[in-house]
Image (tube, rainbow, N blue to C red; front, side):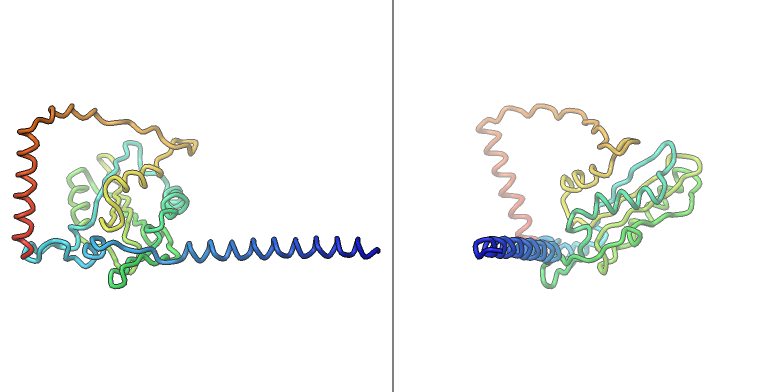
Length: 231
């Protein structure tokens, strides 16, 4: 082997090692960023501390939980199918696999298991019994030691079966939750389900100077009321 060939081989080996090292470092950085705590907003922290509302209102922790019911005419899906969908589609959202830490205002990633959040209940008799069951479920605060969401499956003997989603409001607002839960809906082949749009919103009245002044005064009065409640 000539000196030029040896130099070429040595340069190629160094290049391969450098590319491998770069790939490993990049993978480690991505994994560390994935597990790094995410910041929490002021409002999220106070919702978790149960003091986002004025103290005199005595708001219960369950006031900060969004409860959404889904009904099934032809029976609930198999528990294993629900577990797979939740694990593959819902846990990709960071907060659904993170524990809230309001003291440090962060969301800490954990190794979330959907089985810790999916609850299968015994069948209830009818729609009235289902309403009573739902009231019992939503009267219990979410466990702060786990990611703040639950899915309850309640079969109904004489009526439509129910799947109840419970999510703490600090995790997302209503629109964000719609987006997150919409990804769970699929057809029988696993493709995203068609979204049926609701009725169109009525057209807004024309904005006039008088209407603009009234809106401004209403905003000022509302702000004054909130300041009075807080101070």
